[in-house]
Image 1 (cartoon, helix red, strand yellow):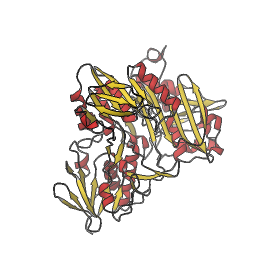
Image 2 (cartoon, chains in turn cyan, purple; image 1 turned 90 degrees about the vertical axis):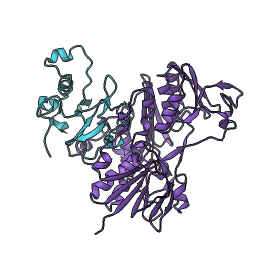
Image 3 (cartoon, rainbow over the protein chains, first blue to last red; image 1 turned 60 degrees about the vertical axis):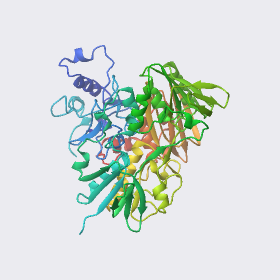
Image 4 (cartoon, rainbow over the protein chains, first blue to last red; image 1 turned 135 degrees about the vertical axis):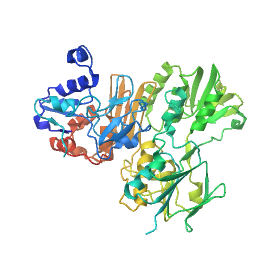
Length: 139
Length: 416
């Protein structure tokens, strides 16, 4: 997953598509309306600068190495979190250079898992990005 | 070519990191692990979560049961190393066994310190809180309504206190230093953490050291007394280095290592709680007895032992946890110039010097702390960054657009 800041409109659609994909529901309004969303991708912005940040699935991920429980692991190139094993110790939060891991509503850490469990093919953020600022491709 | 014989003493974070490091470079060598404990490889920091009931026995293991078999490792458990012959390249065990090696990793960890307080030996219901065995011992000592006194308000004592709030006991933490979590937090952050825990029912006696014990009573320097049914010793740890020291390895508080984990003895590496290396945030030599550090040091040592290029030159202390829902994270040095920001129940202090961020404390909110950690670890020059943005919140906004493009739009191979 790559982000090209030049193409980002700052529309935050990626955040909504992420939260929707994660909800597992089929109706976006039902899934998101009236809720504070906790997306795994976040747009950082200031003035005219905006871009989305999510897990980079580093080749040598320090979060996985620092994980106390083994909840974080690399599976087929994606950094995944096993919610049952995570105790919420925050070690990964203090290690991730992108700020891309955060506690979920009920405690265990959440992060981008490339929609491996939720959508087929392209992660929802990249699929829904109207200006091609987020792309999912092999480099 | 005959296969290399690797011997690893210790099967915790550093030992496992070493196995992974060796296997990344050498699939064929013979790897043997000796462990004094007989619990398999489990995550020591999880004992407080086991005590609170959050983690079960299966959850204690941080690499699956098959880890050793899959990596072709012979595990010798419940066997203690007592003497090292660096010339003859062999390790003597307490039970008389002798293990030859070509390359050895000493990752024997640390042991709980026993403070020299008069009367401590008269306390029968006492235990350290360092191992799975200790955790089970403590659990067995607890009776409904019991008063538990925890000696030591560092991370171990505080996590133990947190777990005990889930039990039907009364908990008091005694810390002789002027604040809890003294090695990790400053006065203001520590006071926030303490107040949070007090609201959850944990009592504290801080800045008042225990002068003496009798069987169920602690008498403090101030004259105050605290009765207890169970005493938990959480007054720090000592690196397990006596075997290496006797064998002639250069030691300070821990056994001294270079960035690749080499000790002063040929063929001997060290990693984890027993090792002392350079903290890149201060440039000083330090024992950084922390889980991620042990894991990374172990891996660098493993690669180096297998003859691959290796180095872990950006070691810094990183601490993060949440206590009863109060999060905090710290990294690097806590010295030099600093800037403080407060707001929305959170406290943040950033330390800087020499044109770089050198350390931070975040308390009450630890979100995205890793961005600061990376700035310290990568020694990112602050002159390319907007300092007020760096302070306001950890985000990539502080970087130049070009640097952000490197970070977000290129293949990320090496995060460490």
